[in-house]
Length: 316
Image (cartoon, one colour):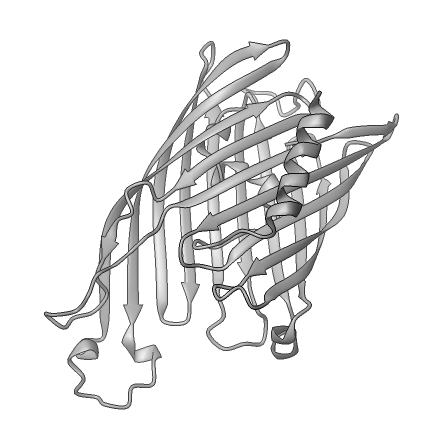
């Protein structure tokens, strides 16, 4: 049944093409699902944390650099999960820093399976430093001050179904579609966040006693932005070493072309509670001629009370 569900989602992805991106995306999203879906908070049954650093388009001035810290945990003897996230994204003169709190409720729906409902409330600080931009007219009223800053509230909602070796999630970010103004001119127009939709799924298929295969997919869509579709797969050796890769498609707004890339991924479980990950994005289109790819680093940990060993392996 799980394989049939995963196959259906995969066929849907291939037939629909690629979907979209507004916020920063991470190649190792499956190691930090709470960033994509608030319903994931607490699903590991212990205190779990992930730190990620992503440097995009190496060798290009002003290229995006993103950091994320996520903490989430299940509350003992309840069906409740709580989460905390801190996020920072820099792209040239534009900077976005956010903090969010997540609540999730996990409902048993079958044998060893659960369906969770998650809600995240967040505050974002969007700012621009005009001194990082070459301005033709120094007296332009839109750039008269050194920087502009705007605080805006927002929210996310997610559904997350999971078992030991399978998951599927649907979530939406920027529910409030908050407006913000980064210009100082009195007649400046307001910008806003657009709702961003995620569909994710993954399954772990045992091949031998010491070897598993884990394919996963991610679809993203947001209005008026390039569409993104991604499929990735990893081999898991001894339930400690993850080796894999992926293929990502960004559909351009005018639908006349695509920005495709290959992704290489490795994760290793250093101890029973500490794991490290690295990914590299290689761009297949002409943009790849102007940069040296994208590097992403991940540090994760899991702690259960005074113990640092989970009762069973966690693949997601």
